[in-house]
Amino acid sequence: MKIMNLRMSYADDRGGSPAQTGCSSVGHYAAFLIVILCAVVSAQDLDRDISGRKAPSVTLSPPGVTTITRGKPGTVELRFHINSGFHVNSNTPKSEFLIPTALKLDAPTDIMVGKITYPAGEEMSFPFSPDEKLSVYTGEFPLTVVVRPLSIVVPGKYMLHGELKYQACDNAACYPPKKLPVEFEVKVVKGPPPAHKNPAQSPHVHG
Image (cartoon, rainbow, N blue to C red; front, side, top):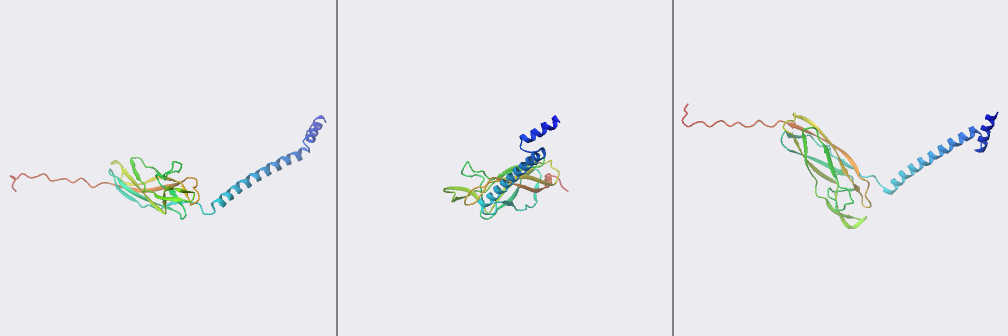
């Protein structure tokens, strides 16, 4: 009886029976989750409302297979496309606060990635910074990558993987930076055999 009285007293102090108190706690927890979910959805809707348009994107045209002679450098060209209404910072933006477009690659063993060449940016000004010209890419822009398989590489096809990091903007504002997965294939072939010169014959040798 004492135990039962204590339990009843505890429940009375909390303002209800044990079952009612448990249900109340579950109800508060469920309400809290609903509030959090609503806040997340509202934030997502707010982001969509602020942009008022489709999100920026950069895509890579499917690159063909580039044939490279082992032991010698070869050049791979990659062409990227920016959707209409947006631009991305060039590889050399004029403001230190802007993130440059940059390609990073991982190559298979004994295949070296050399110089990556970026095009010059187009200087443009925008409403969000009318007094400042920014260096940007619009529409389509190419990159070239020097790839050199070592002379010991077994001939065959090899895939190189990496990512293009960029920051896109429209005429009103800039968006958070993104990373685009990049991959392309090279075909490594043997070089032509070295040419052998016939030794010069002595003029005194007669057939």
